[in-house]
Image (cartoon, rainbow, N blue to C red):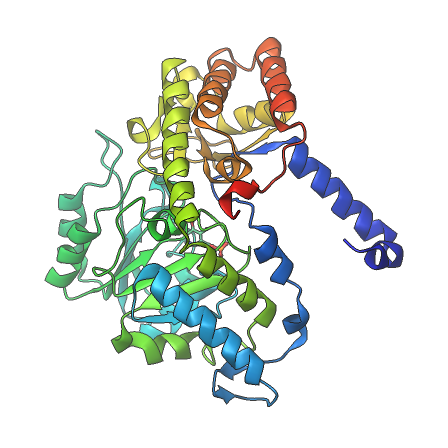
Length: 418
Ligand SMILES: *Cc1c(COP(=O)(O)O)cnc(C)c1O
Protein backbone atom coordinates (compact mmCIF):
# COMPACT_ATOMS: atom_id res chain seq x y z
CA UNK A 1 0.00 0.00 0.00
CA UNK A 2 1.35 3.40 -0.89
CA UNK A 3 1.71 6.27 1.59
CA UNK A 4 -0.92 8.14 -0.41
CA UNK A 5 -3.64 5.54 0.24
CA UNK A 6 -2.65 5.22 3.89
CA UNK A 7 -2.98 8.95 4.41
CA UNK A 8 -6.31 9.18 2.58
CA UNK A 9 -8.22 6.64 4.62
CA UNK A 10 -6.74 5.60 7.92
CA UNK A 11 -9.65 3.36 8.91
CA UNK A 12 -9.48 1.25 5.77
CA UNK A 13 -5.70 1.10 5.60
CA UNK A 14 -5.68 0.00 9.20
CA UNK A 15 -7.94 -2.92 8.30
CA UNK A 16 -5.68 -3.82 5.39
CA UNK A 17 -2.71 -3.92 7.75
CA UNK A 18 -4.58 -6.07 10.27
CA UNK A 19 -5.66 -8.47 7.55
CA UNK A 20 -2.09 -8.74 6.33
CA UNK A 21 -0.90 -9.57 9.85
CA UNK A 22 -3.65 -12.15 10.17
CA UNK A 23 -2.76 -13.85 6.90
CA UNK A 24 0.93 -13.92 7.79
CA UNK A 25 0.54 -15.26 11.31
CA UNK A 26 -2.17 -17.85 10.68
CA UNK A 27 -2.06 -20.78 8.31
CA UNK A 28 -4.82 -21.34 5.80
CA UNK A 29 -6.00 -24.85 5.08
CA UNK A 30 -9.09 -23.49 3.37
CA UNK A 31 -9.34 -25.67 0.28
CA UNK A 32 -10.69 -22.79 -1.81
CA UNK A 33 -7.99 -20.26 -0.86
CA UNK A 34 -4.57 -19.60 -2.25
CA UNK A 35 -2.06 -16.74 -2.57
CA UNK A 36 -1.48 -15.31 -6.02
CA UNK A 37 1.97 -14.15 -7.07
CA UNK A 38 3.09 -10.54 -6.53
CA UNK A 39 2.94 -10.12 -10.33
CA UNK A 40 -0.68 -11.27 -10.51
CA UNK A 41 -1.62 -9.11 -7.54
CA UNK A 42 0.26 -6.18 -9.02
CA UNK A 43 -1.86 -6.14 -12.16
CA UNK A 44 -5.10 -6.13 -10.17
CA UNK A 45 -5.87 -2.48 -9.75
CA UNK A 46 -3.66 -1.42 -12.65
CA UNK A 47 -4.74 1.42 -14.97
CA UNK A 48 -6.97 -0.98 -16.91
CA UNK A 49 -9.29 -0.97 -13.86
CA UNK A 50 -10.98 2.19 -15.10
CA UNK A 51 -11.45 1.19 -18.73
CA UNK A 52 -14.94 0.34 -19.92
CA UNK A 53 -14.50 -2.39 -22.51
CA UNK A 54 -18.07 -3.66 -22.78
CA UNK A 55 -18.29 -6.26 -25.52
CA UNK A 56 -15.55 -8.41 -27.02
CA UNK A 57 -12.24 -7.58 -28.77
CA UNK A 58 -13.00 -5.88 -32.08
CA UNK A 59 -16.70 -5.58 -31.15
CA UNK A 60 -16.82 -3.16 -28.22
CA UNK A 61 -19.67 -0.83 -27.28
CA UNK A 62 -17.24 2.02 -26.56
CA UNK A 63 -14.13 3.21 -28.35
CA UNK A 64 -10.59 3.57 -27.04
CA UNK A 65 -10.26 -0.18 -26.59
CA UNK A 66 -7.20 -0.89 -28.76
CA UNK A 67 -5.04 -1.93 -25.79
CA UNK A 68 -7.90 -3.60 -23.96
CA UNK A 69 -8.45 -5.65 -27.12
CA UNK A 70 -4.83 -6.74 -27.25
CA UNK A 71 -4.91 -7.57 -23.56
CA UNK A 72 -8.04 -9.69 -23.76
CA UNK A 73 -6.78 -11.41 -26.88
CA UNK A 74 -3.57 -12.40 -25.06
CA UNK A 75 -5.52 -13.69 -22.06
CA UNK A 76 -7.70 -15.82 -24.37
CA UNK A 77 -4.73 -17.27 -26.26
CA UNK A 78 -2.93 -18.07 -23.01
CA UNK A 79 -6.03 -19.75 -21.56
CA UNK A 80 -6.36 -21.89 -24.70
CA UNK A 81 -2.76 -23.02 -24.60
CA UNK A 82 -2.71 -23.55 -20.80
CA UNK A 83 -5.67 -25.93 -21.01
CA UNK A 84 -5.37 -27.22 -24.56
CA UNK A 85 -8.86 -26.19 -25.61
CA UNK A 86 -10.43 -24.59 -28.67
CA UNK A 87 -12.16 -21.56 -27.16
CA UNK A 88 -11.87 -19.49 -23.99
CA UNK A 89 -13.95 -16.74 -22.46
CA UNK A 90 -12.08 -14.75 -19.82
CA UNK A 91 -14.74 -12.21 -18.81
CA UNK A 92 -16.82 -13.96 -16.15
CA UNK A 93 -16.73 -12.19 -12.78
CA UNK A 94 -16.71 -15.54 -10.96
CA UNK A 95 -17.25 -19.22 -11.61
CA UNK A 96 -20.67 -19.05 -9.99
CA UNK A 97 -21.70 -16.33 -12.43
CA UNK A 98 -20.15 -18.25 -15.34
CA UNK A 99 -22.20 -21.30 -14.38
CA UNK A 100 -25.44 -19.38 -14.16
CA UNK A 101 -24.79 -17.49 -17.41
CA UNK A 102 -24.31 -20.77 -19.27
CA UNK A 103 -27.44 -22.34 -17.83
CA UNK A 104 -29.42 -19.24 -18.73
CA UNK A 105 -28.27 -19.14 -22.34
CA UNK A 106 -27.95 -22.80 -23.30
CA UNK A 107 -30.94 -24.40 -21.62
CA UNK A 108 -34.68 -23.91 -21.33
CA UNK A 109 -36.49 -23.98 -17.97
CA UNK A 110 -38.04 -27.29 -19.03
CA UNK A 111 -34.61 -28.85 -19.70
CA UNK A 112 -33.24 -31.41 -17.31
CA UNK A 113 -29.82 -30.83 -15.76
CA UNK A 114 -27.90 -33.35 -13.71
CA UNK A 115 -25.20 -32.70 -11.10
CA UNK A 116 -23.57 -34.07 -7.98
CA UNK A 117 -25.61 -33.62 -4.81
CA UNK A 118 -24.43 -30.69 -2.67
CA UNK A 119 -24.01 -32.79 0.46
CA UNK A 120 -21.94 -35.33 -1.44
CA UNK A 121 -19.47 -32.66 -2.56
CA UNK A 122 -21.23 -30.68 -5.30
CA UNK A 123 -21.59 -26.89 -5.52
CA UNK A 124 -24.49 -24.57 -4.74
CA UNK A 125 -24.49 -23.21 -8.29
CA UNK A 126 -25.39 -26.70 -9.50
CA UNK A 127 -29.08 -26.50 -8.69
CA UNK A 128 -29.21 -25.97 -4.92
CA UNK A 129 -32.78 -25.01 -4.00
CA UNK A 130 -31.61 -21.75 -2.38
CA UNK A 131 -29.53 -20.72 -5.45
CA UNK A 132 -30.94 -19.07 -8.56
CA UNK A 133 -29.91 -22.15 -10.57
CA UNK A 134 -32.20 -24.30 -8.43
CA UNK A 135 -35.30 -22.26 -9.27
CA UNK A 136 -35.10 -22.96 -12.98
CA UNK A 137 -34.61 -26.26 -14.77
CA UNK A 138 -35.55 -29.80 -13.81
CA UNK A 139 -32.68 -31.00 -11.66
CA UNK A 140 -31.69 -34.53 -10.86
CA UNK A 141 -28.73 -35.46 -8.70
CA UNK A 142 -26.22 -38.23 -8.31
CA UNK A 143 -24.01 -38.84 -5.31
CA UNK A 144 -21.43 -41.05 -3.67
CA UNK A 145 -21.95 -44.67 -2.72
CA UNK A 146 -22.49 -45.51 0.92
CA UNK A 147 -19.82 -48.20 0.85
CA UNK A 148 -16.75 -46.23 -0.27
CA UNK A 149 -18.06 -42.63 -0.36
CA UNK A 150 -16.90 -42.33 -3.96
CA UNK A 151 -18.86 -41.81 -7.16
CA UNK A 152 -20.59 -44.92 -8.38
CA UNK A 153 -20.55 -44.56 -12.18
CA UNK A 154 -23.12 -47.32 -12.68
CA UNK A 155 -25.49 -45.32 -10.53
CA UNK A 156 -24.63 -42.10 -12.40
CA UNK A 157 -25.48 -43.93 -15.62
CA UNK A 158 -28.83 -45.25 -14.44
CA UNK A 159 -29.87 -41.82 -13.11
CA UNK A 160 -28.88 -40.31 -16.48
CA UNK A 161 -30.85 -42.96 -18.39
CA UNK A 162 -33.91 -42.44 -16.21
CA UNK A 163 -33.87 -38.62 -16.46
CA UNK A 164 -32.29 -37.92 -19.89
CA UNK A 165 -30.76 -34.56 -18.86
CA UNK A 166 -29.63 -31.98 -21.42
CA UNK A 167 -26.31 -31.66 -19.59
CA UNK A 168 -24.39 -33.61 -16.99
CA UNK A 169 -22.32 -31.43 -14.66
CA UNK A 170 -19.44 -32.88 -12.72
CA UNK A 171 -16.90 -31.35 -10.38
CA UNK A 172 -17.49 -30.14 -6.86
CA UNK A 173 -16.35 -28.27 -3.78
CA UNK A 174 -15.75 -31.02 -1.28
CA UNK A 175 -15.23 -34.22 -3.24
CA UNK A 176 -11.70 -35.41 -2.42
CA UNK A 177 -11.36 -37.83 -5.33
CA UNK A 178 -10.66 -37.41 -9.02
CA UNK A 179 -13.51 -37.76 -11.47
CA UNK A 180 -13.26 -40.22 -14.33
CA UNK A 181 -14.03 -37.85 -17.20
CA UNK A 182 -13.86 -40.61 -19.77
CA UNK A 183 -16.61 -42.54 -18.01
CA UNK A 184 -18.69 -39.39 -17.55
CA UNK A 185 -18.23 -38.70 -21.25
CA UNK A 186 -19.48 -42.16 -22.21
CA UNK A 187 -22.55 -41.69 -20.03
CA UNK A 188 -23.27 -38.23 -21.43
CA UNK A 189 -23.03 -39.50 -25.01
CA UNK A 190 -25.33 -42.40 -24.26
CA UNK A 191 -28.10 -39.98 -23.24
CA UNK A 192 -27.13 -37.28 -25.73
CA UNK A 193 -26.26 -34.75 -22.99
CA UNK A 194 -23.50 -32.16 -22.95
CA UNK A 195 -20.67 -32.95 -20.56
CA UNK A 196 -19.91 -29.90 -18.45
CA UNK A 197 -16.97 -30.07 -16.05
CA UNK A 198 -16.81 -27.53 -13.24
CA UNK A 199 -13.09 -27.57 -12.60
CA UNK A 200 -13.04 -24.78 -9.98
CA UNK A 201 -11.10 -26.74 -7.38
CA UNK A 202 -8.67 -28.73 -9.47
CA UNK A 203 -7.94 -26.41 -12.42
CA UNK A 204 -4.41 -25.77 -11.12
CA UNK A 205 -3.68 -29.47 -10.89
CA UNK A 206 -4.84 -29.88 -14.48
CA UNK A 207 -2.87 -26.87 -15.76
CA UNK A 208 0.17 -28.17 -13.84
CA UNK A 209 -0.28 -31.57 -15.51
CA UNK A 210 -0.52 -33.37 -12.16
CA UNK A 211 -3.93 -34.94 -12.83
CA UNK A 212 -5.79 -35.86 -16.05
CA UNK A 213 -7.45 -33.07 -18.04
CA UNK A 214 -11.20 -33.00 -18.69
CA UNK A 215 -10.34 -32.33 -22.36
CA UNK A 216 -11.01 -33.79 -24.90
CA UNK A 217 -14.00 -35.33 -23.08
CA UNK A 218 -15.73 -32.20 -21.84
CA UNK A 219 -17.90 -29.97 -24.03
CA UNK A 220 -17.69 -27.11 -21.53
CA UNK A 221 -15.31 -26.45 -18.65
CA UNK A 222 -15.88 -23.68 -16.11
CA UNK A 223 -13.46 -22.72 -13.38
CA UNK A 224 -12.55 -20.15 -10.77
CA UNK A 225 -9.05 -18.79 -11.04
CA UNK A 226 -8.22 -18.45 -7.34
CA UNK A 227 -8.19 -22.00 -5.97
CA UNK A 228 -5.45 -24.45 -6.99
CA UNK A 229 -4.93 -22.28 -10.09
CA UNK A 230 -3.38 -19.66 -7.76
CA UNK A 231 -4.76 -16.69 -9.67
CA UNK A 232 -6.73 -13.57 -8.82
CA UNK A 233 -9.78 -14.04 -6.61
CA UNK A 234 -12.90 -13.10 -8.47
CA UNK A 235 -12.75 -14.31 -11.98
CA UNK A 236 -14.03 -17.24 -13.92
CA UNK A 237 -12.82 -18.91 -17.08
CA UNK A 238 -15.03 -20.74 -19.52
CA UNK A 239 -13.28 -23.17 -21.83
CA UNK A 240 -15.14 -25.01 -24.55
CA UNK A 241 -15.19 -26.58 -27.98
CA UNK A 242 -15.33 -24.11 -30.85
CA UNK A 243 -18.79 -25.35 -31.83
CA UNK A 244 -20.12 -23.74 -28.62
CA UNK A 245 -17.97 -20.58 -28.74
CA UNK A 246 -20.60 -18.11 -29.89
CA UNK A 247 -23.26 -19.30 -27.48
CA UNK A 248 -20.82 -19.27 -24.56
CA UNK A 249 -19.68 -15.73 -25.33
CA UNK A 250 -23.29 -14.58 -25.67
CA UNK A 251 -24.08 -16.23 -22.32
CA UNK A 252 -21.66 -13.87 -20.54
CA UNK A 253 -22.22 -10.76 -22.66
CA UNK A 254 -24.88 -9.60 -23.28
CA UNK A 255 -26.58 -12.56 -21.59
CA UNK A 256 -25.78 -11.79 -17.99
CA UNK A 257 -22.88 -9.37 -17.46
CA UNK A 258 -22.06 -5.85 -18.51
CA UNK A 259 -18.52 -4.63 -18.97
CA UNK A 260 -15.67 -6.90 -17.84
CA UNK A 261 -13.00 -5.86 -15.30
CA UNK A 262 -10.00 -5.31 -17.55
CA UNK A 263 -7.44 -5.14 -14.71
CA UNK A 264 -8.62 -8.57 -13.57
CA UNK A 265 -8.27 -9.82 -17.13
CA UNK A 266 -4.69 -8.49 -17.05
CA UNK A 267 -4.05 -10.39 -13.81
CA UNK A 268 -5.61 -13.53 -15.33
CA UNK A 269 -3.38 -13.19 -18.38
CA UNK A 270 -0.29 -12.98 -16.15
CA UNK A 271 -1.48 -16.02 -14.23
CA UNK A 272 -2.14 -17.96 -17.43
CA UNK A 273 1.49 -17.42 -18.45
CA UNK A 274 2.73 -18.44 -14.98
CA UNK A 275 0.89 -21.74 -15.08
CA UNK A 276 2.61 -22.70 -18.31
CA UNK A 277 6.09 -22.47 -16.79
CA UNK A 278 7.82 -25.61 -15.52
CA UNK A 279 7.72 -24.24 -11.94
CA UNK A 280 3.97 -24.50 -11.93
CA UNK A 281 4.19 -28.21 -12.67
CA UNK A 282 6.47 -28.53 -9.62
CA UNK A 283 3.90 -26.61 -7.64
CA UNK A 284 0.97 -28.81 -8.73
CA UNK A 285 2.97 -31.95 -7.95
CA UNK A 286 3.84 -30.62 -4.48
CA UNK A 287 0.22 -29.70 -3.78
CA UNK A 288 -0.71 -33.35 -4.43
CA UNK A 289 2.14 -34.87 -2.43
CA UNK A 290 1.55 -32.47 0.46
CA UNK A 291 -2.12 -33.47 0.58
CA UNK A 292 -0.91 -37.07 0.80
CA UNK A 293 1.44 -36.17 3.67
CA UNK A 294 -1.45 -34.50 5.47
CA UNK A 295 -3.54 -37.63 4.82
CA UNK A 296 -0.85 -39.87 6.35
CA UNK A 297 -0.57 -37.66 9.43
CA UNK A 298 -4.33 -37.51 9.97
CA UNK A 299 -4.86 -41.25 9.45
CA UNK A 300 -1.94 -42.46 11.57
CA UNK A 301 -3.16 -40.35 14.48
CA UNK A 302 -6.60 -41.93 14.36
CA UNK A 303 -9.03 -39.72 12.43
CA UNK A 304 -11.38 -40.73 9.62
CA UNK A 305 -11.34 -39.26 6.13
CA UNK A 306 -14.32 -39.28 3.81
CA UNK A 307 -13.65 -41.81 1.00
CA UNK A 308 -10.65 -43.02 3.01
CA UNK A 309 -8.30 -40.29 1.81
CA UNK A 310 -7.57 -37.98 -1.08
CA UNK A 311 -6.45 -38.02 -4.70
CA UNK A 312 -6.33 -34.23 -5.00
CA UNK A 313 -5.46 -31.16 -2.91
CA UNK A 314 -8.59 -31.59 -0.80
CA UNK A 315 -9.39 -33.72 2.23
CA UNK A 316 -12.67 -34.04 4.09
CA UNK A 317 -12.26 -35.05 7.69
CA UNK A 318 -15.21 -36.95 9.18
CA UNK A 319 -15.12 -35.78 12.81
CA UNK A 320 -18.32 -37.58 13.85
CA UNK A 321 -16.41 -40.85 14.32
CA UNK A 322 -14.69 -39.11 17.25
CA UNK A 323 -18.01 -37.75 18.51
CA UNK A 324 -17.26 -34.17 17.43
CA UNK A 325 -18.91 -31.64 15.11
CA UNK A 326 -17.27 -29.64 12.35
CA UNK A 327 -17.97 -26.27 13.96
CA UNK A 328 -16.31 -27.37 17.24
CA UNK A 329 -13.16 -28.44 15.41
CA UNK A 330 -13.19 -25.32 13.24
CA UNK A 331 -13.10 -23.10 16.34
CA UNK A 332 -10.50 -25.20 18.17
CA UNK A 333 -8.24 -24.94 15.12
CA UNK A 334 -8.80 -21.21 14.84
CA UNK A 335 -7.73 -20.94 18.46
CA UNK A 336 -4.47 -22.56 17.31
CA UNK A 337 -4.24 -20.07 14.39
CA UNK A 338 -5.25 -22.62 11.75
CA UNK A 339 -8.05 -21.58 9.39
CA UNK A 340 -10.30 -24.22 7.81
CA UNK A 341 -14.03 -24.69 7.39
CA UNK A 342 -16.73 -26.96 8.73
CA UNK A 343 -18.40 -28.83 5.91
CA UNK A 344 -21.21 -31.36 5.55
CA UNK A 345 -20.15 -34.93 4.84
CA UNK A 346 -22.04 -37.47 2.74
CA UNK A 347 -25.07 -38.84 4.66
CA UNK A 348 -24.56 -36.15 7.31
CA UNK A 349 -27.26 -36.05 9.96
CA UNK A 350 -26.10 -32.75 11.50
CA UNK A 351 -27.41 -29.36 10.34
CA UNK A 352 -24.99 -27.40 8.06
CA UNK A 353 -24.34 -24.92 10.90
CA UNK A 354 -22.66 -27.74 12.84
CA UNK A 355 -21.73 -30.22 10.08
CA UNK A 356 -20.00 -33.55 10.51
CA UNK A 357 -16.90 -32.64 8.59
CA UNK A 358 -13.98 -30.30 8.23
CA UNK A 359 -12.71 -29.47 4.75
CA UNK A 360 -9.01 -28.85 4.31
CA UNK A 361 -6.67 -28.38 1.36
CA UNK A 362 -2.96 -28.14 0.69
CA UNK A 363 -2.83 -25.48 -2.05
CA UNK A 364 -2.33 -22.27 -0.03
CA UNK A 365 0.25 -23.63 2.38
CA UNK A 366 2.19 -25.20 -0.49
CA UNK A 367 2.34 -21.72 -2.02
CA UNK A 368 3.93 -20.53 1.22
CA UNK A 369 6.54 -23.28 0.84
CA UNK A 370 5.54 -25.85 3.49
CA UNK A 371 7.09 -29.23 2.67
CA UNK A 372 5.75 -32.77 3.17
CA UNK A 373 7.31 -33.24 6.63
CA UNK A 374 5.59 -30.18 7.99
CA UNK A 375 2.29 -31.17 6.39
CA UNK A 376 2.61 -34.58 8.05
CA UNK A 377 3.28 -33.02 11.47
CA UNK A 378 0.37 -30.68 10.97
CA UNK A 379 -1.91 -33.64 10.18
CA UNK A 380 -0.84 -35.47 13.35
CA UNK A 381 -1.38 -32.42 15.55
CA UNK A 382 -4.79 -31.67 14.05
CA UNK A 383 -5.85 -35.30 14.46
CA UNK A 384 -4.83 -35.20 18.14
CA UNK A 385 -7.07 -32.19 18.65
CA UNK A 386 -9.99 -34.08 17.09
CA UNK A 387 -9.43 -37.37 18.94
CA UNK A 388 -8.81 -35.67 22.31
CA UNK A 389 -12.01 -33.64 22.09
CA UNK A 390 -10.13 -30.33 21.68
CA UNK A 391 -7.82 -30.84 24.65
CA UNK A 392 -6.17 -27.52 25.71
CA UNK A 393 -2.63 -28.88 25.59
CA UNK A 394 -3.14 -30.23 22.09
CA UNK A 395 -4.44 -26.86 20.91
CA UNK A 396 -1.47 -25.08 22.53
CA UNK A 397 0.94 -27.50 20.90
CA UNK A 398 -0.48 -26.70 17.45
CA UNK A 399 -0.43 -22.95 18.17
CA UNK A 400 3.30 -23.13 18.99
CA UNK A 401 3.93 -25.09 15.81
CA UNK A 402 2.13 -22.42 13.77
CA UNK A 403 4.06 -19.61 15.47
CA UNK A 404 7.43 -21.28 14.85
CA UNK A 405 6.66 -22.14 11.26
CA UNK A 406 5.17 -18.84 10.13
CA UNK A 407 7.78 -16.54 11.64
CA UNK A 408 9.09 -14.42 8.77
CA UNK A 409 7.40 -16.69 6.22
CA UNK A 410 5.96 -14.71 3.28
CA UNK A 411 2.60 -15.64 1.78
CA UNK A 412 4.00 -16.32 -1.66
CA UNK A 413 7.23 -18.29 -1.76
CA UNK A 414 9.50 -16.84 -4.42
CA UNK A 415 10.62 -20.28 -5.55
CA UNK A 416 7.39 -20.62 -7.55
CA UNK A 417 8.24 -17.80 -9.93
CA UNK A 418 11.99 -17.16 -9.55
C1 LIG B 1 -15.64 -22.48 -5.71
C2 LIG B 1 -16.51 -23.12 -6.70
C3 LIG B 1 -17.27 -22.34 -7.57
C4 LIG B 1 -17.42 -20.85 -7.39
O1 LIG B 1 -16.34 -20.14 -7.63
P1 LIG B 1 -16.38 -18.54 -7.51
O2 LIG B 1 -15.39 -18.13 -8.52
O3 LIG B 1 -15.99 -18.27 -6.10
O4 LIG B 1 -17.75 -18.10 -7.80
C5 LIG B 1 -18.00 -22.96 -8.57
N1 LIG B 1 -17.99 -24.29 -8.69
C6 LIG B 1 -17.30 -25.09 -7.85
C7 LIG B 1 -17.32 -26.55 -8.05
C8 LIG B 1 -16.53 -24.51 -6.83
O5 LIG B 1 -15.86 -25.28 -5.99
